[in-house]
Length: 496
Image (spheres, rainbow, N blue to C red):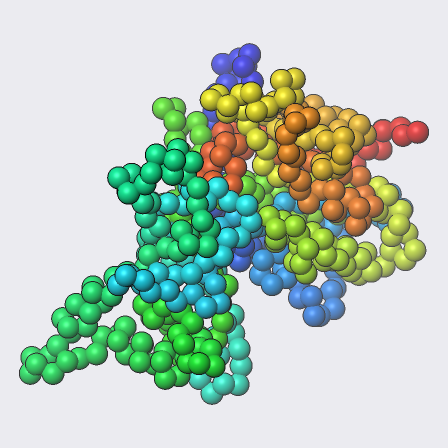
């Protein structure tokens, strides 16, 4: 990239800006795994993909474009090549994940202390929790509501991108020198965001009086009475499970009655949208880069690859629960992808050739990588450190924390060379911990060749993370080339 001609430089700058803007448009629609899937779903439907139902029979055809979801938090989209043959084709898959570390509302989340209405939360995944302080926080997720006659339950998605919550720091004057230097958080005590004050709520109620002086009940006051009398979100002791002001807002946003709210799964999110940053606006600074950067790239590549290889089944997948181990029915550790692939094969009447199809298949596990931080460069292994704005990262680990091996690395490099995509390598230092991805899990579950890749970012698992727009562009180019040319490259690869 550094030695590019003026024409090549212009193309890189234009591509980086375009795909950086595309990613920001995508990530700014999200806030929970459900909304990650919804953002993907919107783009698939707009591009002519047909939605399948897990509970129904799948009628598939050559040249068809389809997608399927599970729990609205796991999604797969695939294109069946017009010339797909069970005797020569395979699956080319890019896998990512839809979840990110966050704070999630507890089932019993109503907390009141010192005249302050707070919400109780659980820590989801391994977040850098100190980065959640002093930020305006919104809420996104799924709410289950019942019909007025109680005959049916319906799931609804909600996304409140206003700063309705805040997690204030403790003033420096109230901390000891040791506390200031250590900044240790008690996750149970200190991570309880503020929703409102009781006194302000009382003032709002007092302000709502009609001309005769009779007190009119505010929407919130009415709702609080409903909560105490009828809301299912109460335990057997009739204690309030959720803060009435929050329930009021949720009901208003969803246009339902409070007493019809049954359950929820809500994530707190940074209310500030993702944006460009840097003096040249060459970086994207955003929540949930890990791993929506890869989720966006995987599905966008499938959509933009005008002609995936005609003899392949090209597939992009986004799993839930990667940040907590993938062991769920929507996670990579489940049978979900295996079942979906088997159903595709059955619908295409491949007979007993399915094992051969798997042997020709290849999976790219795409998850963000640790870019070298200039202030902490010693944390990286000297010869294998990813640099910002210098291309896609191949992740390798001798202990199989990543699924990369010599064969999958060689094949991926060949794809990159064909697409003129810059590549770099990452391994951890021997005295450092190594994260993992869905790659080793899927490689073991499916028995297919796999590589782990990503692009460099800073501040992984922070409330806000940073990556380079040229790297987003490079990842998009690589995955498009993978869908288009992997089969022809693999055909000419001679294994022992």
